[in-house]
Length: 398
Image 1: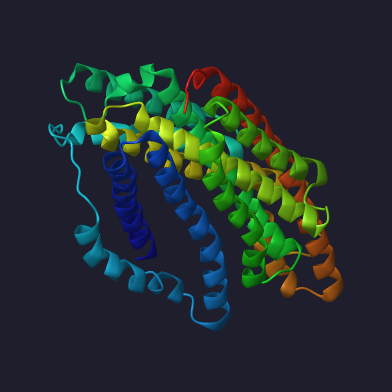
Image 2: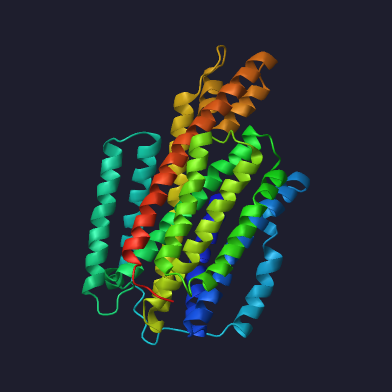
C-alpha cells in the first residue's frame, strides 16, 4: 500500500509541477518579471526542503510515523479550492494527441538506463548492466524517431537543437543530481555518525536553505549586469567546492564547516536553477511553455533519481567494501550490518558492549570513506557542468 501511494504521489506531482512553471510563462511576458517569478517559484523548493525535515523530525519524535503523510492534507485541500479561482489559465491552442505509445517508449527509455547505472554502482559492470543500458538506448532511439515523424508530437525534440535550451536542461539535471546526492549522505552523517535527532539534523539545514532562497532572489538582479552563463558557472563552481570540501574531510571537519559547505552548495544550486529554468521557458514559443516546463521537470526528477541511486549506490558499495566486521556475528547479522550504516547500528544494539562498539566504529569509518568517493564524483560532475554552462548558454543576455 505504501509503494502504491508513493507511486501515486509521483504521478500527480509530475503532472502538477510542469503546469506551475508553464503558467508563470503565460502570466509574465516581461523577461525581468518572469525571472523574478521563477526565482520565487524556485524558492518554494528551498522552503519545502527546509520545512519538511524539521516538521518531519518533530512528528517522528512526538507523533506516529503516518502523520508525516497526513500533514500535507490541510494544505492541499485549500489549494484544490483556491487554485482554479486565483490562477490564470493558459493552454496550448493546438495540443498534440495523447500519445500512449510515446509515453510507454519514454518510460522504457529512462527506467532501464537508471537501473543500469544503479546496478553498475552497487553490483558492478556485468551483462545485466549492458542489457539494461542497450534496452534503454534502443527504446530511446525509437522514441525520438517516432516524435520526429509526428506533426504535433508529445514532445518537440527539435527544441534540443537550441544549445541554450539543451544546455540549461542538462545544467538543471546535474544541479539537482548534486544537491540531492549530497543531501542524501549528509542527512545520514548528521544522524547516524554525529548522533543528532531527526529534528536537530533538520535544523542544521536551515542556514543552507535560507542561503538558497536569498541567492535565488538576488541572482535576478545580478543577471542584469553579469551574463547568465557566468553566473551559472559561478553557482556550479560553488556546488563543486562543497562536494570537494566533503571529499577532502570525509565529513570529519567541524560542524560549522559542514553547515558552511551545505550553504555554499545551496547558494550555487539556487543561482543555477533559477537561471536555467528561466532560459528553458524563454527559449520556446509561449504555446510550447508547457512542453518546455515538462522537460525541465523531467530533468529535475531524473536528477533526483540519479543523485539518490548513483551517488547512493557508490556510497553503499564503498561502505560494504570498507566495513570490517568483528568476529562472532551470525550470518544474518553480517548481512544486515553490511548493507547500511543504520543496519550496523541496529545490529550493534543487540551485541555485547565491546563487540557492539567495535562494529559501530568500523561502520561509521566505512560510511565516511564512502562520503569521500561520493563527493569526489559529485565535484567532478559539477566541474563538467561549469564547462557545459559556459559553452551552451554563452550569448544569452538579460
